[in-house]
Amino acid sequence: MRKPRKRTFQELVSENKLQLLKDRDAMERIEQRLEEKRLGKAE
View 1 (tube, rainbow, N blue to C red):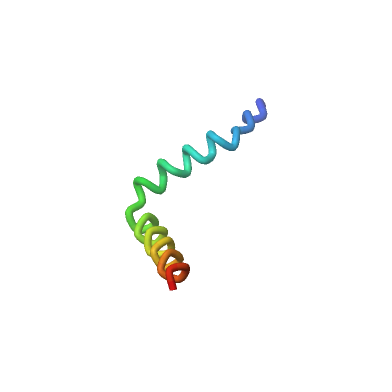
View 2: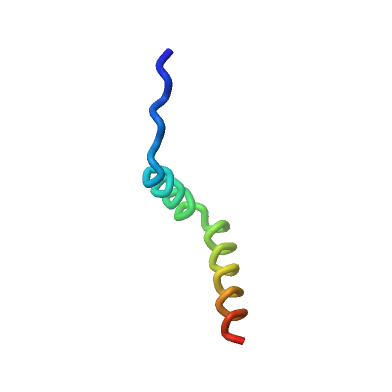
């Protein structure tokens, strides 16, 4: 049996990004966290 080829970091990032773009709930949580960080730094 062939060993699966290791993916490059860039391939993993791209694949992860595509999955997140399809997952609206995850996108909402990430946007919420980023917003909280921005508000925290502004104070």
